[in-house]
Amino acid sequence: MRGYGGKFVKIDLTKSKVLVEDTPMDLMKSFIGGKWLGAYILYKYLDPKISPLSPGNILFVTSGPATGTPIPMSSKISFFFKSPLTGIFGESTMGGNFPAAFKWVGLDGLMITGRSEKPVYLYITPDEIEIRDADHLWGLDTEKTEEVLISDLGREIEIAEIGPAGEKLIRFASISHGHGSRMRESKAGRVGGGAVMGSKNLKAIVLHPHEKKVDVYDVDRVKELSREFISRAVKEPSKSGIKGYREYGTPITVAIAHGDSAFPNHFWENVETPYYEDLDPDLLKEKYYKKRLSCWNCPYSCGKYSIVEEDDIFKGIEVKGPEYETIFSFGGNADLTDYKAIISLNLLCDRYGVDTIDMGNIIAFTLYAVEKGRIKLDRPVKFGDYESILYLFQLTMERRGIGDVMAEGMKIMAKRLGLEDIAIHVKGLTLAGYDPRRLKGMALSYAIGTRGGGHLRTTSYAYEFKRIIKPEDTGPEKVKFLVDIEDLFSLHDSMIFCRFARFVYDWEFTIEILNALTGFNYEYKWLKEQANYVRTIIRWFNLNAGMKPEEDTLPPRFFKEGGRKLDGTEVRITREELRSMVKEYYRLRGWDEDGYPRERIML
Image (cartoon, rainbow, N blue to C red):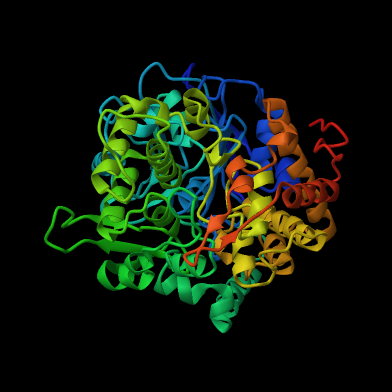
């Protein structure tokens, strides 16, 4: 079991049944873990047409061979399910200490089905797995949930839980970890994993490891490769990103995106913000940062613990963050210009257990619809006003008034209210903070993303900002570059590596680590082919779930409106530019020109 925990667990909450099996190593050799294994499980065992919030949906939790080992930036775990937000492949990744503990209790896969009659949590040690009553936890926010469980079970545990948003089946609810005094906070967000847990009456998963150890194939080589990672990252700190992440965290991207005319503002009308001085990451660092925070065994320390000390209504608020995407969604898109207000909303999202990107985007969408006279509310609301944004947040969390349809996500809200022409999402997932009219690699990445308009499948923005590829280019060489990056990241997501290690873990280095961990002697050619195979598995799952190839596009507004700069000029993208990239992507994947794989896959 080199590189693996050794156990595959299946839990049926309807029957309160737990089945523990040995990890099938022939399966792990082919699908490694993480993304590749999750794609296999959903494709083989889940009806793609199933209602995402029904008991039959699978919640599959899995680590990778690097998780819990000395390899840096590998404390990651992924959750797979049919997304209640998008209706297609749901994939969500979490950091912190929970991933390593998952491996330390001996798990490689945890498949959860059914629905408990009453609220429960799972308690897992290396020796036992119990389904325990969670009536006393239901209704608590994420921080209180962790406090109660730690008080009951001790500080050695690691917890992944949902807050009230997941309980109320808000379709972009997150799965949370490490809140409160432990300062390990991380979330599996974006596609509604928290709502899936809520639909199963599953409040939390609690891990209680006895020792922090994973057996690997070549111990000495793993230690050597771990040291080599540090050496590579420190030798070229600007290239690796370690300097910026340690000093600023992800908010450094505010300066980069705004300076490159790719920072969305006023619900995607602008690509630069007139309020940059108020959102300058130096201001955040100087006034609010108090300490660096890291996931387990991570030298980048990108997390920042912020405290508001000014004597006003925000005094005393403490939070891990805010991350760049939170600043974009509430600061850029909703026009908030007070970091204290953004920090406050960050904390509220964390405690309720809701994704900050989708929450900020859907609030900005509502403000935009009101501003354009498309909808009316019971009270005035406006961009840039904290009270307006807080009001809409509270309505959503309570599923009250307009908040009930906001809780369904942007795609459903737009369809019900006749706002599809102004909505900004791809396949139901709102976009991250990189404008695709400026960064045309991101245009392709959003359009063909496996889970909708996410930014992490290629992180094309990182290569465009560094001019490794040109932002305005739409040619075939750029598409090929992004396919290669997507395949490498697909392997990373199976190991599982943090995306911020992208400039250190190239193909060769990644394969060396994989072989040292497992002893399976993988080669580049097979891994590259398998990455394409897994991508095709996910494509078939999405098509069978009802997705149409014509959805491989951008929102209509992006083709009708340019993104305005402060000087009055615009950045634009045409349908023809995007379509040419999408067709080239299909060709490189071996699919037909309409986006259908040429062969059915049988597992």
